[in-house]
Image (cartoon, rainbow, N blue to C red; front, side, top):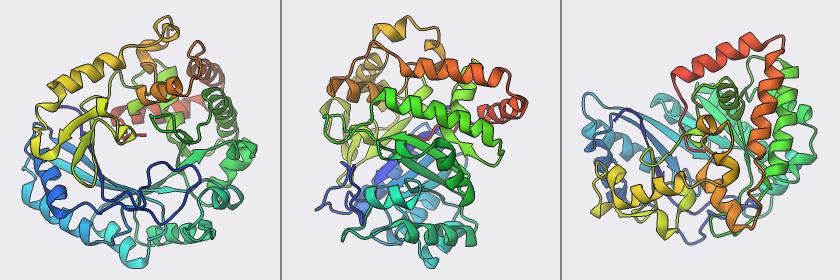
Amino acid sequence: MSLPLNLILKLTRACSLRCSYCHDRVAQSDAMSFEVMALAMARAFASGYRDFRFIWHGGEPLLGGLSPLRKALVVQQELAGADQRYQNNVQTNGMHLNNETAQFLGEFGFRVGISIDGPAAVHDVQRPTVDGKPSHQRILKGIERLRRYDVPFGVISVLTERSLAIPPMDLLKFYRDHELFDVCFLPVRGNARAQGESLAAGRYYAYMMQLFDAWLELDDPRMRVREFGDWLLLSMRWPGSLCSSAASCVGGTLSVEPEGAVYHCDKYAGESDYYYGHLRELDFDKLPHSATACRLRAMDVNLPPVCLACDWLKHCAGGCSHDRLVEGRHGKATDICHRRRLLDHVRLMTADHPSVQKYIAMAAEQAKTPDWAPC
């Protein structure tokens, strides 16, 4: 199969932070057993896929130390075929990045995503420790350890109403001044059952337009904002670089819960419509053609009229289907597409920008190797 398989492995749903907006943490979560972990990778390597991204996730995947990841490396070396390639990614809250962990991640080529919600004044309110203490400085120290051992990393920031009070240029300068040059900005989302805090699409995209303008004004080629790279591609009528801009992400991502339940994506955990079954019962080769996958593809293309009438549709594909599901269950109107307004804005702003050729070159390079990491 031509596209890589993103296999999200939820090592645990427990976590060492108590983020105000989190609906993924399960206080009494068991850790993923070695049997489930090994079976998940065996199913993957036995399939027709040739490229894999193993995404170690949680909860907090480093809560149980390095033992699970050490065992995973052994399994991968034993099972990977000669023509199969794989990359290991860890998505962490950054609280457990000591020297031993950073050295291990660097030695074995892991890529790391770290959650940090901007300046301490916002981050520490939204992402406190279990006992209510600040976590910002500890996470920045963990990032320094990653640098010390040459571990490639990026930052994921969740935007909330509190975040939107920060002037866009000030927010960008925070990342630049801390040399956090690879960033993505996600709106806080409730889950698919309409539980938890959500940032309205209109509020998110309006702020992101301001942030995009500030990014162009900052004109620092080191600053890579994942969403902006994707929107630049789309604005030039090229294929996007993110799964949220794909016509359908069905078959490109699978998520495995600690006990072995397999879902279309970790955003849908607990949703019966998006449940493939238990690892013991599944053949990954057959999943893209299963009744569940066919039904999910049909749901992907079941777009609201505002999408069907839009000239951006064949490029943006209507955005992430989970976002549409959450918006619908939260009772949000779907007669206005804020994503369309944003793409019109990006196209307008880059058409006459003095540095547009630099950004076009950057976007063209991205197009050669789409990120395709779940967002």
